[in-house]
Image 1: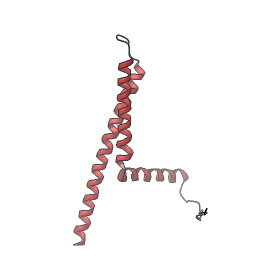
Image 2: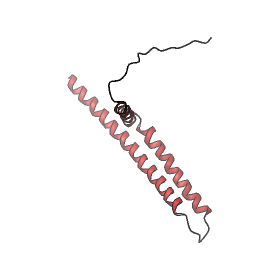
Image 3: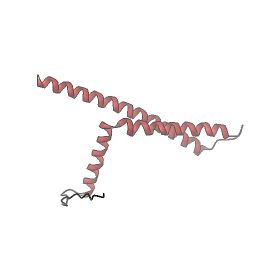
Image 4: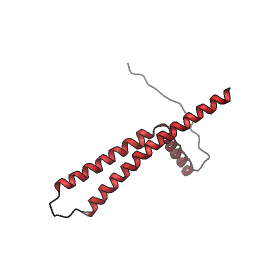
Length: 115
């Protein structure tokens, strides 16, 4: 049995500038990522980038000629990929820790106010 699902919404124009409205939505999405899912959005992609950079570096070492030169572009690409991955991983771990601390402090402050 197929059922149709419809949703009615009122289409009104926003009073704000479309550019400002779009930026506010983007910033609220970033705040949501920062406070709710930093491990999934920073650490996991960072680990994937870091592993990709290390894999490319090992592959470059294995396939290079003994005494041959390594391309500058590939070396810089590998370095940047690995470095960005490391920074993203640490950023996700730090954001997760800081978010946990903020939530812990908020719960303690609320419990003290109730008493």
